[in-house]
Image 1 (cartoon, rainbow, N blue to C red):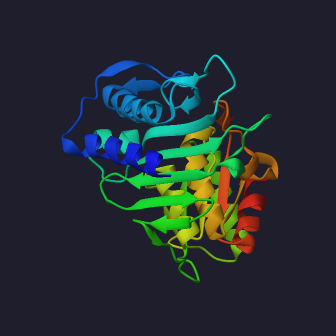
Image 2: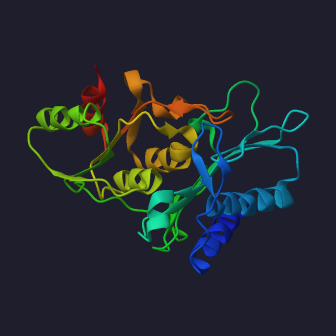
Length: 266
């Protein structure tokens, strides 16, 4: 846990230290534009992880894609160096660094297998972390949940068809609530776990597992439940490869999870 905390902290420090270059320096594995600050933050994290754990680690990251060692790895790390790149570029302070880590297991490694996870609020300064032996902490202190959760739905939709899930969710919950799109899926999902929102939905077919792995591990440890399209438990999403996640929903508890799951159903 200490190693990924230090790596996330160093990347956040780099992003805060001054306005970093938005020059386009390439494209990620799915064809998205890679900007200089994305790549440099990623390089910081990967460099620190290799310094700590050696080169025999499997890296799954937003910009580099999948970096496999020559032999069976000791660990797998899933990284989103800048979750909220558009916000960062625009000067909107809702940006995070996400890292999840697991000991290698023969067969597929999934979100539920992450031994440690960190979501670092770059500008807010809060560090949300999970470890199998320490539970969920905020800045090193045990996290507590708001109960009942705030009546807020967080989500991303963009195209008209994706917005159809919103009235379906309102109908299932029996009333409307505040709807917010803030710009960092990882931070949003953690807020659902903490009860600062009751649900999160992303129906854009743009997410990858790197965007959500660490935050879903944290939110689930707090008691939230999450699903991908078709009702598949989000904890079953792989982290040992870079994969697209067509949609994802998170509910504060079982009742709200079922509203989210049913709203996302065809």
